[in-house]
Image 1: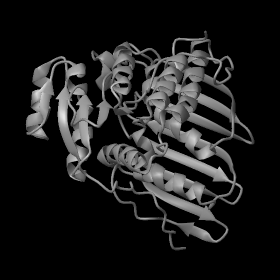
Image 2 (image 1 turned 90 degrees about the vertical axis):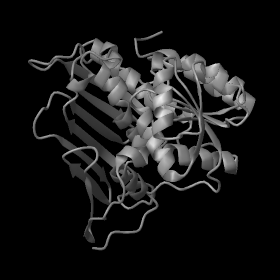
Image 3 (image 1 turned 120 degrees about the horizontal axis):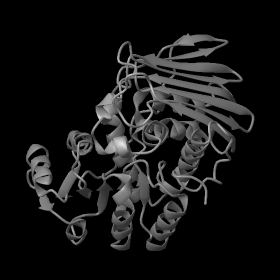
Image 4 (image 1 turned 135 degrees about the vertical axis):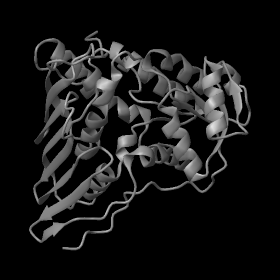
Length: 355
């Protein structure tokens, strides 16, 4: 059957001249800046402790932007309306706090925080200062994920019963980098995209229990385990996530979403190359997707935040709602640390364990 038209592409703001400042000019910032340049957005300042990195990003993407060593200098720039905080989690909280206190809207890199209490405090501060705080869960705007979430929202497969996600890829590039120091790297830093998609797909239905395991792969060069699984029990449904970051050949990314009225399947050799199919009693539909996760996902997160600012509303990827996704990831990390013991989302308050 013909694929239905669904609103899965990023919706653009009315204005393209909002002043954007970026704090953190590491590797991922290139995807942010490339997306903003393609969208015609206005980046006016960059900040990074190693000034040369900020200068290199300026030269490549936004030659007229100011460059700063300290993030506070960027916050003092009256042209900066929105701050994209693209640093590692261990230094992010005080930067986000400073930006909110300066009256700036903030897009925080994912994972948002390593502690739910710290995240709740930042959300409360944003509400007090009457500014918007969003999280760069860019996977929500990956074309295949975006089309599936739009199909679920439209009721095309009915109430969800089961979601299964499997990702096999080569994550050995983290060896020797700061990422290799991150405990529960796969479940936390990488897997949070998939935990976030679960919260989007199942909506307000509560997650009741998480069981997870992680293990090293033979011959892996990284310090952190590259293989992990998580099983999530939800009200009236279940989910299974399987990650193999040690698959050096034949990569695969496959998601199955099963509902009472039908199912959705996405599959491809990578996060960038995906096809989607919808299966119902009326037949099968295969939409032709536009865009790619990198860099359309990054365009989507900023576009949605700018729309929310213009329309004075909570963004779709708002930080307070994102705490539910983090609660799943934290519960999975704690369960894996105890050999698969069941954990209740929300009771595990930090990525390091329970408090």
